[in-house]
Amino acid sequence: GALVALRFGGHPATWMLNRLPGDLRESPRVMVWRAAAEETETLAATFLREHPAALGAALIVSVVSWAAILAEMWLAAAFLGTRLTPFDLIAVVAAARVAILLPSPAALGTLEASQVWMFGALGLDPTLGLSLSLVARIRDVLFGLIGVWWGVMGLRTRQVGTSEQSG
Image (cartoon, rainbow, N blue to C red; front, side, top):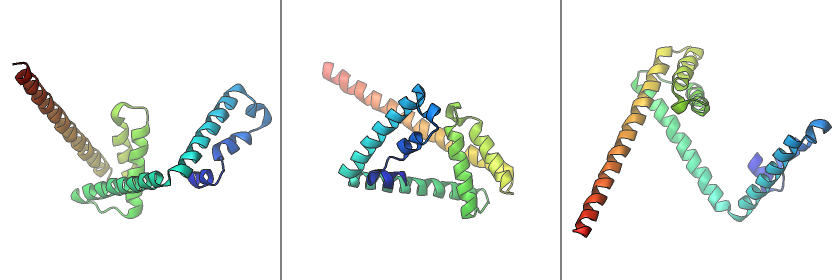
């Protein structure tokens, strides 16, 4: 909705800030927020008008990314012997995404707690939520190790190339 409003000349955040009660609306902090919102919305509207293909590409990438996240969670749950309904799947993924956004380093503890809580709230076995969290952690560590290995191999290749050039 915000993108459509911006595309057709609306400024939803600025509009909302302008509707605050008078004293609050005129406070220095709100005035700074209003100026920032207005500038941001103006830049976003310009981008939407001048680069619609880039926006379309970004939306496609986003949809594909979310589809992959949902598919990964559904597949992991299936491997653990649980069939999630579409509603359950969206609820579990939403809880995981919110947990990742919380101010906790690498969502340590918050991701696991969100999954245990959400599985319990959905009437499923909470240990499956913890299991899914551990599968995600193992996946992340494996990808991290692959990245470290790749980086080390790149450094070795670079060092070998540098020593051959100097020799």
